[in-house]
Amino acid sequence: MKPVYYLSFLLLLLFACKQLAYVSTDKGGCNDMGEKQLAAKRSLESKPDSVYYTISEDTLSIHVGINYICCAPFTTSASIEQNLISMEVIDTCSPPTFNCYCRCMCYYTFDFNFNDFEAKEYQYELYLKEARTPTPKLIDKGVINRN
Image 1 (cartoon, rainbow, N blue to C red):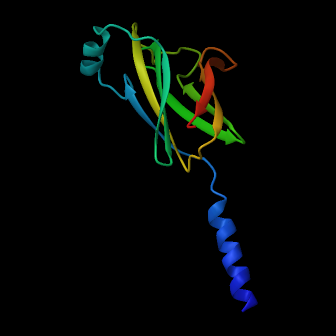
Image 2: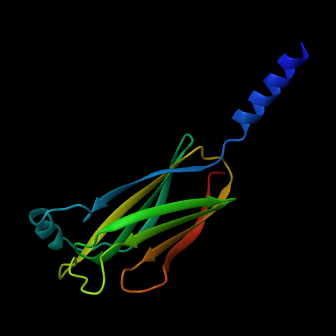
């Protein structure tokens, strides 16, 4: 009978130790647009840079909107250490010519998605890594609290 208790205890520990986990980033705004769609977007009024979040059950989505040079190629990354969520938007245009940019500004959006959200306080930091500068720039930081 003791092995059953030990197995039950181990399973309880396994399922009770959920932690917030980064799942993906959904790109929107000027990301992945052809020249025709980009021309239509250029005429729109620009929006201010923004960061906001939504929580649905155990899913946390952090929406990021950034004004940046048109046609820039981006990747993203995110990490979680204890209660700090660090997100980075990375411009991957190649030096030295930087010939991937267009001569306009666009509003790019990124939805960072996380699962296993716990009802506790998290800090977040958002960085922009520009291709033309060596160090990431802090765009925003704040607190996420479901309580």
